[in-house]
Image (cartoon, rainbow, N blue to C red; front, side):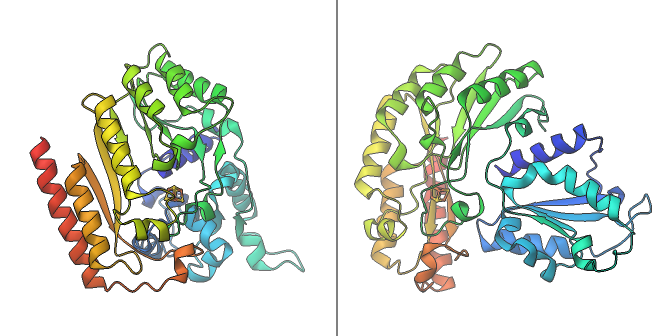
Length: 371
Ligand code: SF4
């Protein structure tokens, strides 16, 4: 989603006459698109921003520095306290305002504050109160790859899993109209794109006048499209009908990413995942029976508060039983605003590392066997 948001910002800026550079030494504006999903991601951003203390660009100007994305939404104007070199902060629902913010900062740059103005207010802009993104932002035709494009079908999430910051920084689930999605795909194909990934934080909860299954069938019929897939799904919104549609659509990749997060019913309850271990095992079984040669991948969090050895063994054994094609394993890290903050982060760091390593090793063995 962040990769696509960066493209959206690049598209908006280039249509407003800006040129892109990957060389920060020659940039007049430097934008950090940020992620808040784990503390580690945020730490990396703070350290990167720290490298850009004020200095002149090759064109002789002091570059403007902007922070956009989930950290912008998370910290709002407080980013300026920690990183005073930052000039503007834009949350995900407000990214369409980025060109306007930059041009207004450029216009006021170097001017002395008018009498009565706070110099801080004149130099700093933050926009983090938006709700709906305007549809136009998805139609600038900017895709980094020549053949593959990410297409957002929904944004935000209303599930409030207790470890997850997404509903707080991206807002609740908002669906694009299916007509708009289809026309973006057709426009992209007109530019030479042949492969598409449909994106949503909870992609299979998609619902406009059609649901995800119906949308997939419509996308499958688009002329010029060779291949497509969709991420990321939630088990509670996964139906047998989805598997049938996956099997039936010839252009749809037989690839399904279905985060399980834990194999322990007790931990799944604390995570507010709204399904049980058995429910997940049944889904995985039905997927493999219905979708021929289907790839199944997952996400797992180890070391969630109160996770004991028995809970961990439940997860370990689930990985062993299901034999995922790949699994992304993360150590729990407390996130601001989330429900899990009320629990004590009581699994010691070393123990989280041991569990992480154990599942990683197991998955490596399984993945090797599947090659
Ligand atoms: S479904 Fe995914 S994005 Fe939504 S709250 Fe849960 S983990 Fe976060």
